[in-house]
Image 1 (cartoon, rainbow, N blue to C red):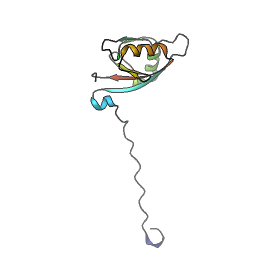
Image 2 (cartoon, rainbow, N blue to C red):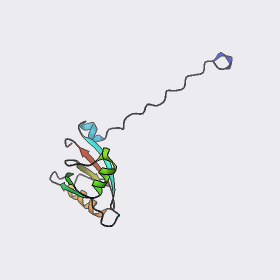
Image 3 (cartoon, rainbow, N blue to C red):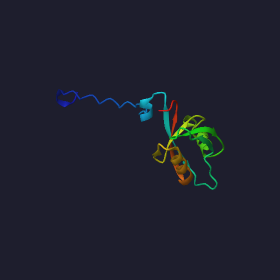
Length: 121
């Protein structure tokens, strides 16, 4: 007790660390996992090293990961590895048009990509 008989209030409980907030795609469909990768093509001769399929018109579906920046990313970030069937749904905030995504990948030096795995939304 504090002087005068007052009871000192208990310290507020420590904030609980909660898991990361699910992305909008994950909220719409919990089977979809989404994460962000960042690739830097500034090195001489840097290649993404992925074969992609544009047939859905809105994303880049990974057909194959070859030697290149994506494979380097996978080795450095195994918990966020990009694999066959994953979809790149956004590149540098561009989304909704697969052809535009490929243009951004070719022209921009640093690529911030949003990748999804699971059923298409």
